[in-house]
Length: 416
Ligand code: EPZ
Image 1 (cartoon, rainbow, N blue to C red):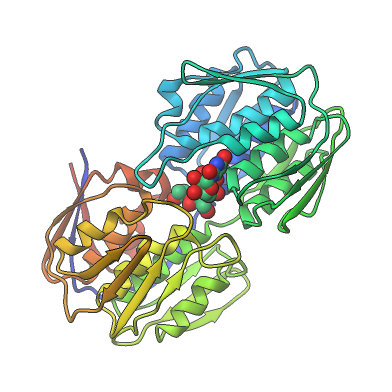
Image 2 (image 1 turned 90 degrees about the vertical axis):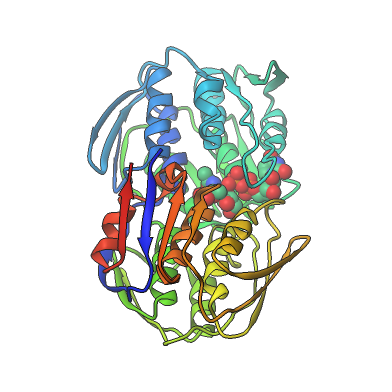
């Protein structure tokens, strides 16, 4: 089991390039299922979750060619519209094959994704939406089994804002008969990126990025080329790493268009931020000011940045209140931060963080992807060495993380 060893105290300086967005690439890979012609993608990040999705698609009969960040998918023959438990249990986002498989093949069997460290993660809204479009859906032996000769357009209003729920239904609606209207839709930039790719394939979609998305079903989609958008959460994570060390960094191949809520909080914490067309520069103060935050669906503060900001607040000047409103158990990083000497009290879905002068390095354990990132942020500024165990979580969502941290001057290395 790999571990990451960090020696705290380095001030991060320099420049790194941001990779393509994991949470845009995953649904976009599934979009390939909707067409018999090749989908050519670029800027696809080299991550374990991406590799898992590609293996899943191959098991269905999709032919995959991969060359670094370029991936070509040929779904002309889908021989096996099934996503097995073995595959799905390692990555919940596998549920994103359900909608496109039913739309393209008329049938799909997808294992229910288990819960994960941050919550139960049900998919009832995905199922409800497909049923509204006329799919016959049964759930038995832990599998969702959905069938439909041809989906038909429907008006769907999800009970809560769900990112992959919105994506699954948008994917399914592309080949349905008639118009589908998704209300209470998630507005995340990754959904806009997916819609842009689908439109390039011939889909008829309007309203992506707003809370009402309209999809006019078509008979078939054709091949296309698409470049995956930059990863806004990776961008935010490196901004936090630089900010907590009092550093100055420039992140390239990224866009700040989607990080307003995060940038606002970094400005409140005392950072100076310069935005360029496809780059962002951050200059941190000697010591950050504590910033309170409340997670909520886009464009509000993203839940995927909550853990990283908590780590920053551990050594900031003042007291911060962090409220997590999206997932019921997304404070798994708190116990690990306490091991580093942080002062955090949890009250329900609120955490009160009192900044301390200094954290002390220790051995800690990663529990989920973004919790792992928060332990890196804390380890960079803790006195002495921090050893982070179970960093396979990290490898799911951060491409070449120790190389990029190295390039910024961090004293970090992977130990087997
Ligand atoms: C997506 O997860 C992201 N994953 C998550 O990123 C992100 O944290 C999350 O959206 C919120 O922004 C991908 O895009 C692959 P939701 P998703 O459906 O779609 C409840 C990361 O670190 N809900 O928007 O699974 C759900 O339990 C990951 O990259 C239902 O109750 O999240 C949660 O409380 C972690 N029923 C809330 O809605 C449903 O059918 C929002 O979940 C669907 C969701």
